[in-house]
Length: 332
Image (cartoon, rainbow, N blue to C red; front, top):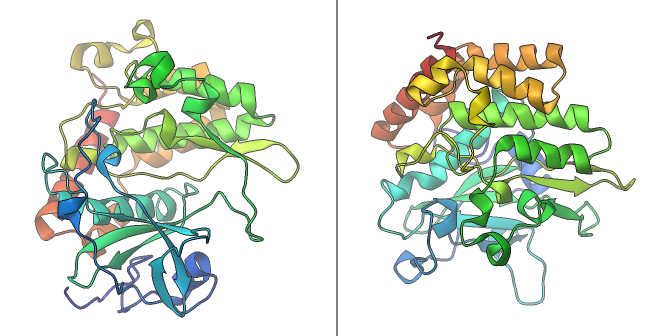
């Protein structure tokens, strides 16, 4: 692998390992190496069986890990893993599949650092051959190691392969998903704003795999439910040919689409305003969120340039962001 000149966690410049802030947030202050001492054989992990609607997350293997003696190691038998490692998928129909870990890492960092979206703690790690893998800290356990009650939106809507077919997690609309928040979360207005911002983010950053299992709620110590941190965010358009949205019915009923959406097949800011109104986002908060996403953000480009993507993929990523932003701002 090339020598590091940025933190493989926060992408801060001037580091050849995790920066102190990453060590605190991801590893509880332990001094941990980003270099793994075990190999991953992608050739024997080709997860193609049972694939229907092609997605990136559907063909990624996930390895359970813990930290031991300053090293990230596979979880020993009988122990509970605290981290998930996602190597580059072996599935050969994905374009530029070796770039998927760095893509997910960058997209998650942009969500948190630029748009202040709460996300799962994450970084990159490296196998002995230099291949990058994405690592995320599990957020379904509390600081004492107790399991936190968590339900994804497929479970909340009682959808499964048995009830809705093999593509069950792609059924419905984001308006339907918002209704689950109102039905489950007592203080739903604040959580609805978080959900709304995440839906806009996924559109602008071409995450075509934001399906029902990629949104969850968690139970608080008081027994209430809140949205879980965002996870599985990446620009899927770099790797597969997909649409604007993962859910088959898109944002909302077609009868509510703007003329621009109806004519071009792509939503603009006006559609997200209608969507926000329909799901109950407070108008002032909705305007703040949409204004934030309407501004071209220089930090998106800066983080992309500092990311561990190849130079070609950095250009693709920035071009995708510009194109989606232009669509979002289109008036006609």
